[in-house]
Image (tube, rainbow, N blue to C red; front, side):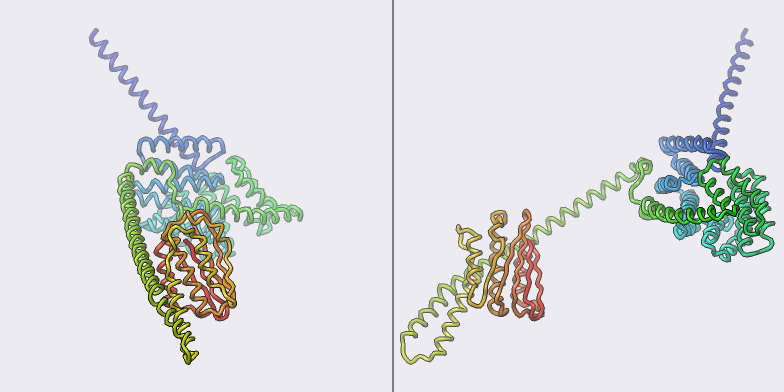
Length: 552
């Protein structure tokens, strides 16, 4: 009985082990099946199943923090999308993968990933006819390669760009170099060798080399052996074009039929359209040929527009916004760094604000000191010097035999002292600012000068601080004094405009103008305005008057 029990348990162990092995085998077979269908799709339904399989693989890898596996799956998805003409989606997939490479610490692995991803971007841009950008990404991929053997595919891809650009000599030179390296491993990498050989044969055909047909047929034979449907389609297309140019329409139709059958089998709209485009070349109906040429022209215009759109939308060089997947992978690693960066920015901003506030308060203290000094001087001039001068002038006028020019000079001295006192006199506390400002500006009116103010009554002066009102009062007074002394103007216009808490004032006159040289007067005005965080600008040319714009 004991022996039977042991034997039974052993049998159960064997059954479960076999079941586990069968499950693992199924998973391996499934992965291999979908790998073949994403790289060498035989029809669109199988491609869609493979696409779904690898998208689920990406999510699974991300959830298990297997970044490398996620990148590999994303690259396979992009290859399949490119095959079926889903260029924008393919490009976006590669961008997502590139963002994920940032968290890979192993430089060798990262370099390998960068080669594949940049190569795929080059292939995408070639398919949408953005050749310069395709070359850029192929060259970028080459930067990450150490050996010639690893560079074969990229050299081949660069050669196809020069083929598309009809620079056949340059393409042939690159392919010859690639063939020398590929020939050493053509048994192990038959598909790669066939691809380079096919392109080399096409270059021979374009360069009128008699060996072109033999080379192209050899490449086709290798692709048939490898069961590479997409490669076969490409070879059949090249051979169709070859025999069209040789005027052998019978053989051209034969190869066209084979290419068209594969396109339908794969069910790729892009491949079917290309095949039918070649068929149009086989017909002798001028209307169909005309239709094809017109369609090609419209297609080129459409592609150009799509190229610009794709390049702007998914340009990797300018890609700044991380995808959701990349953010999940990088969040923990960057959170600490971001925190310290945030604190540094806050400290910097607070420091700037404090320093700025200190400087502004310092300027305002200086401005208030200047205003107090001006007020004191103005009072002394008005109460002392001006009154004394006026009294002397009055006494002299009552005397006889006083020369007229003496009286004129004394009168001028009196007027100048009054002007100095007026220009530096402060606002009267308690009186309305608007009335005082208008009164001061109007005081400069004379038979020779007309002063016009515009919109001064629309300004809400109470919304501006006392120091700002004082500054406006003094600066506009200085402008009018300069006008009276130097400009010879007959008209001065001062306009006001308020936008919420911002005030814009423009002074203009029709005086003689001058080449601007900032003397004490202008410097004083600039100091006053900037002390209250404002801006002032001066414009003047000879005989074109003066314009001053002030913003507070």
